[in-house]
Length: 80
Image (cartoon, rainbow, N blue to C red; front, side):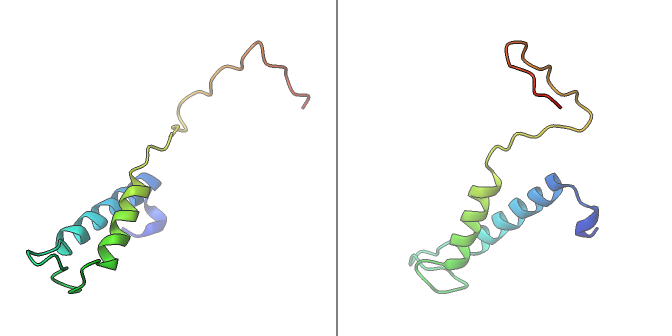
């Protein structure tokens, strides 16, 4: 399936899945270095952690099928 046919939730899930797989591959070895990059501070693992941190934030989502909330009676109405 290509991107135009994926929902935002599916894209988010694929980003998380890919970032976790990268972190598994780039896990530091016994010497403290990445086995793939051979660097102590692996930039690929750092980028994957940043993607996870951003993608796993709780984002309020509203389904298109749900009804909007009722307006607050104490709030002034806008002229429209």
